[in-house]
Length: 318
Image (cartoon, rainbow, N blue to C red; front, side, top):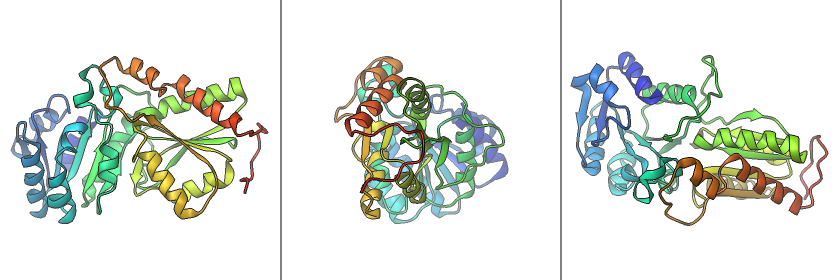
């Protein structure tokens, strides 16, 4: 809902914004834009490849196209994204909605668990995954003004508000939502609320003071924040509703190798599976992506390494 409303507001401010739908305007909320600006809305039907190519042409012609579909569908048309959009630096915003396990009962065929990995390896591509309503609106505002290719990943489930109306979205800058010095939990998108809840549980039950960092911009990644957390906390953990391969955790791991730090990283995500049908909360519980599962993994990894809870700043063991 917030994406659709933000898109309408962006359309009022920027006359070059056009929206393309792939037969899912109701589900992706782009029907709101169609109602307001019917002459700037294009329904392509179940033809994501044609839609992406059309969007690339519109972008090269001076428009700022937003094309939306489920994340699993739109990123599956990889050749058009790679060649028509990224290679030509065509300023298309690809909006992948209903991403991750949170799509629930629709099941594996529509459960995008690999999309971040696919998008972040493409040259010229930006990857953004907001965590709540306000951040989604601010991200759309930013993307409406930008002119580069981008992938905006949105979850289906409702999430609690974490930001106020005065929140300032800073592209490429991760945000500390909860400070702590025993470990750092990096999270993105729909898992951020669970990570915060897990951190509060760890503090009150295990005595582990966990820092929680919201990574809304996965590419380009905030290496300055990573370097700070690697220096200030002895253990780091990534949490994401995505395959544990190639997503946020992969971005962090690759960055750590380049930095030469020895601070250990735990990558916590969906295992090497296609997913299944079920209520989102049941799937999160099964794959340990709910608050309890995140806290359990964090506690186990923390104490397994013989780390002691001291409640003050750590120096990194070399």
